[in-house]
Length: 378
Ligand SMILES: Nc1ncnc2c1ncn2[C@@H]1O[C@H](COP(=O)(O)OP(=O)(O)O)[C@@H](O)[C@H]1O
Ligand SMILES: [Mg+2]
Image 1: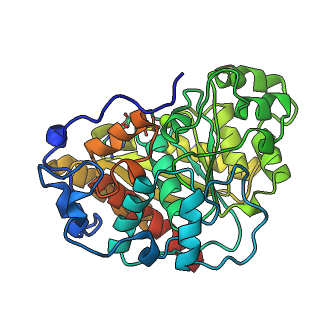
Image 2: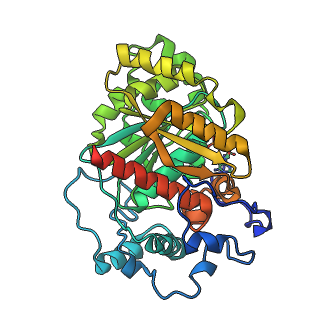
Image 3: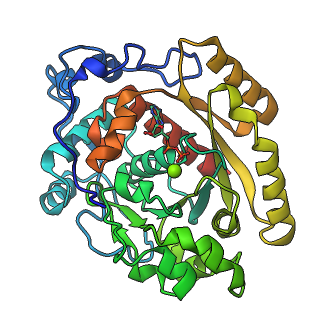
C-alpha cells in the first residue's frame, strides 16, 4: 500500500466550526488555536504567525537531536539542548522539509515550554482498547510525534495488521517490508525492522504489514507465545529510547496480550460516545489476568478522552463518568473532534506536522506534555 502523500489538501471550508474544545478540562487555547478558526488561514498554520517575528528555529530552542539519522539513537547520554548553532545544523541535515520543521517549531514557540522532562528510563506504553475506532492509532502517532518534537527519543511499535500507525508516520509497510510480524514469528531482531519516521526527527517506527493478520493464529503454537514482543524489546535495549508506544489492534487476542506483556504502562483511549464504557470491564479483567500471571509491572497509567464533541451533552456526561470511575489516571486534556486530525494520515503525517496550529494538534501536544510531566513526577 502506498504511504506517500495523498492528493492536494482540501479547503478549510470543511473544518468543523466547533473544531476547538470548549470544555473547561480541554486545553487552554492560545492565539495559535484561535487562528485556526480564521476561514482564510493557511492549512499549515502560517496565517496565525503572519504578524510575529518570533518563532524561527533559532529562538525556539527545539533541537532535533537525531535529525535525519537513519539509525535509532545510540544508548542515552546527557544531551545538551537549545543551542541555536545546533538547531541550524540539525535542520540543515534534517529529512523534514524546512517549512514543516519551522511550522511545528513556531507553534511550540507560542507554547513557551520547549523541552519536556525526559523519563529516567524508557517508558513502554501500550495503547489498547478492544473497541475499534476509539483513537488508539491516532493517539499513538500524535502523542509520539509530540514527545519526539520536545526532545524525546520515541519508538512507535505498530501491532495492528492494518498498519495505520505506519501509514500515519509515513513509513512504508507493504508485504515485503521487514516488519513486526518477522520479529514475533521469525525471531528477526527489532533493530532489523525499525525505521525512522521521515517527517519528524527522533521518531522511529516498527512497521506492521498485512502479514501480521496471520500472526494471531501462528502465535498459538509458538513457545512463549505471550512474551515474544517483550523478549524482542528486551533484546533491543529499549533504554536508548525515552518512550516506546505500542499501538494495538482492536481485539484482546494474542497480539494485544503480547503488548500487555511487553509494556509497563497501559494507556486507554476512550471515545466520548454512548457505548464508550462498554467493554472496559472486560479490558480491565484481561489486564488483571496478565498482571497476575505474566507481567506484574503492568498498570493502567493513563486514560485519554478522545473525539470530544463540545456541542453534545453526551460527551460531557461520558467524560464525567470516566473521571468519576477512573480518577487521577484520566488526563485533564481532552482531545476534541477535529477534521484536521482525521485528514492527517492520508498525507502520511501526524496532525502535529500536517496542521500544527489546529485544535487537535494543540490538544495532543497538551496531552503528551501531561504524560511527560506526570511520568517525571513519579
Ligand atoms: N480527534 C479526532 N477527531 C476526528 N477524527 C478522529 C479523531 N481521532 C480519531 N479520528 C478518526 O477516527 C477514526 C478512528 O481512529 P483510530 O485512531 O484509527 O482508532 P483505532 O486505532 O482505535 O481504531 C480514524 O478515521 C481517525 O482519523
Ligand atoms: Mg488503530
